[in-house]
Image 1 (cartoon, rainbow, N blue to C red):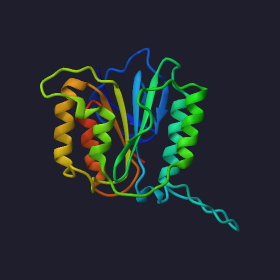
Image 2 (image 1 turned 60 degrees about the horizontal axis):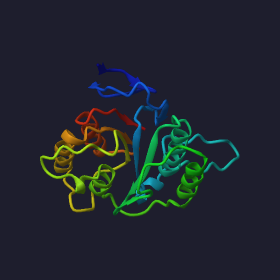
Image 3 (image 1 turned 135 degrees about the vertical axis):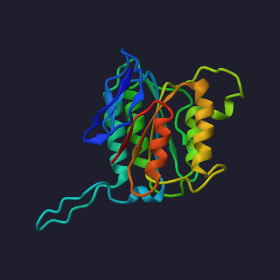
Length: 219
């Protein structure tokens, strides 16, 4: 069916989405997490240290603004904590390069939550924007052979970023869209995108979601 509507006041894409009815019931920045094999691709460049959203001032008190990275960490923990026990997830971060934190998807149990909490406590905002490397790692694009229909190790990808690509082997947004679009003919992964910044990067992420059966939100 075709999905229309809003996610907490933000317009979503009108796209054919067929979530697994037995999938998870958690959410990431308001986007329902409905997959069974899920990857969260989290941006950790220097700009993620900027304030997230609006900061409310309190008379007579110094208020430390919440950063974009801190908001992403909180949302990721909340999403994983609410997952169906049968779901599996991976975390990939990217700045100047991408990093995968587990070889195989893990269940959302107490052990993985402890490991995730420790990982998030160590993440710092620095570096550039190598989004292609992040997508390549999350979707295992290097292992995909042209014309070969290979089952995707994931069925749902959440991409969080606040800017356009500035680093890596592929920096042109249109070329990244083309490469992902071509590969996803075989992978068939839903790609949702969260834009947590300002500027032209929002349109790029919106296209990435639209072209791959996902939802786009801007925070």
